[in-house]
Image (cartoon, rainbow, N blue to C red; front, side):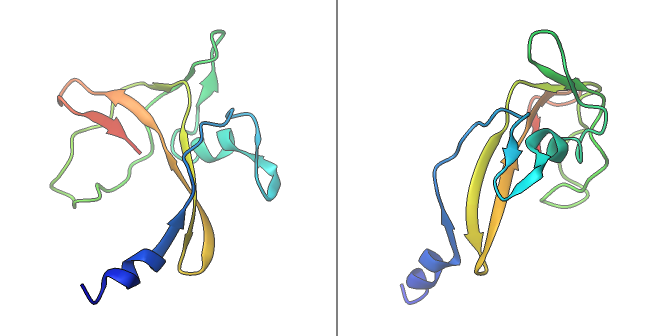
Amino acid sequence: CVLLPCLWTAAGAQGVSFPDLGSAVPGHIDTIYLDLARMVIPDLAADKDGFYRGSMPIEMRHIEGPDSGGSPPVTSGFSDAGVLQIKAGGKDRLAMLFDLGSSSDSAEGFAV
């Protein structure tokens, strides 16, 4: 109970949004959301239907450690990304969630 007020101030968040990946990141007019997504999937590109497709994401560690998680899908694709502006440690941050689909060796989806 004593730590509860500390948790309230640890990170402030606003509502999640789903911006067009071709739009500029607020405060960074030379960077679009697609640039950030390409940090995870370097060859990501829009198809004729507005769906974004690419190959496997870069290698990264699972949040639970090296023995957790399945392998990423051979090809990745999504139509949008969830974006959440937060304040953590007194600094403005941007959190993004990409649902890349599922792989053949896992019943779970693969998200970054």
